[in-house]
Image 1 (spheres, rainbow, N blue to C red):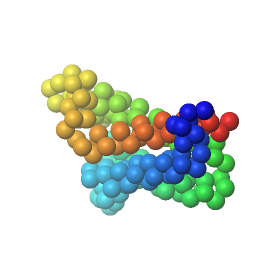
Image 2 (image 1 turned 180 degrees about the horizontal axis):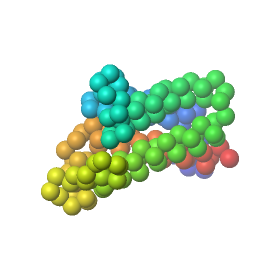
Image 3 (image 1 turned 90 degrees about the horizontal axis):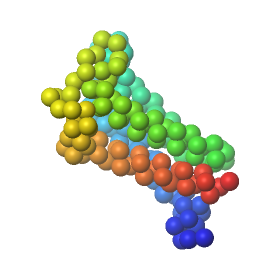
Length: 157
């Protein structure tokens, strides 16, 4: 077995997964325009706005789930289930990000028109990822955590 596989499958891999999970949670919880502060603002102003843009709710609830999941695994929650659920959440984040931007910022939602800023969908995503450091960090962290969780899931059979 290679060193990389041993690292992912051992306690080191658990530590890496926990650290990445906490970073992903922090990025979503404190996102400057879709995190906790925005959720509180929307809930106090007009909760109906969450229908047009559900990201603040989704970001905060999923970040809270991550913050609860890491200590749960430490306290004995079944690892394989946690790894599978975490990998699923990372897929939801990644697919959600690209679906949101490829559809013109949620153009598929009722009452929302597609907005591509005058670019093709691929150009819009590329521009977002190269100019929005928060989004780039989020996608990078989510991708890294997905790889680690799949590695842990695979090695803990």
